[in-house]
Image (cartoon, rainbow, N blue to C red; front, side, top):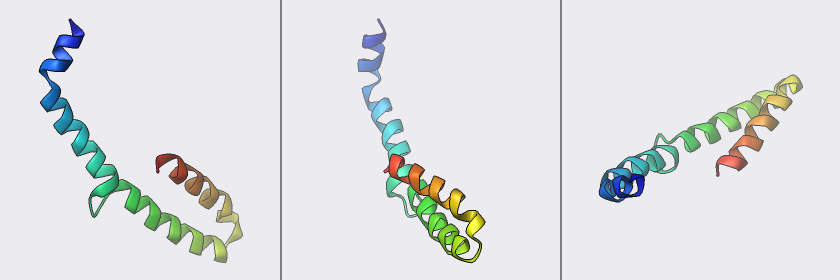
Length: 67
């Protein structure tokens, strides 16, 4: 029964998942793009204050997982 619902809703599922993908990766204001910009800012801040290095490293590690 659930399989029929999925098949019957295939277009809606495509539209919704594509919307999410676009917001995460492709839009000019994508989440990934924003995180990369923030990572650069945090790296620059960590060069001034080394106590921020752990936060920068964590963000970079998570970015690799997202990509």
